[in-house]
Length: 249
Image 1 (tube, one colour):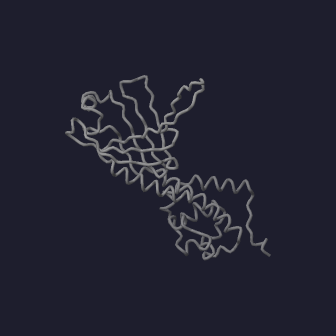
Image 2 (tube, rainbow, N blue to C red):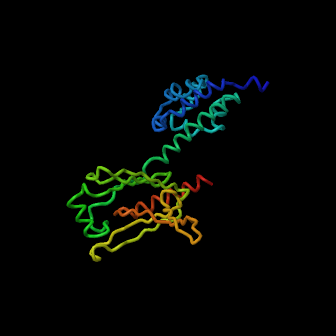
Image 3 (cartoon, one colour):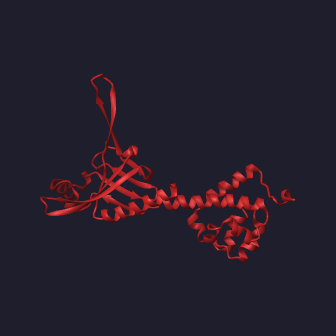
């Protein structure tokens, strides 16, 4: 009967196994050999009866993460319950890997840089050169999830606060690369303007109406990255943005 072919696990045990799988490091899983797959995945998942089939079929860590139901059938996983449980655990592992891949830095730099072309004025550049500890810096990090930057207070400012902001690709509207003459046109710098509806990049201004009511006015102020690698950052952001839209669809 079909019921006899179903392997069931108590809900509490299943939750424990899912927690164990979610704690696995996908970057380490990819390097597992066949024996490690058995010891560190099949046995904790109570599927050690499939060990021989996995070893004989050379199921290493990078193959494990790619397994689908059709592959499990080819491996001789005949019980419906076993396949359902394994696919459930593999889904957790695959999602964890995808999240990890999307969180890795695709581009990261710090601004401002030691070039007159990437400062608002010659005075700002001189300040940067002569008193670097007086300058506020930003650490930029582009990932598969969005654009994050950390504003670091000047080292001489003991009262200021560091601030981290983030733009999710879901709220990204447009990016624009520009070349701006600096220092009386003696040099040209590249800057990347990022337009978004994210709450971190939208400035809310309150305007007083004649009636006395306050009407919020949203003004989109672009986030600006001034850096020699602005063109490279633009290409990386556009690719990551496009990939995130494909995932959303």
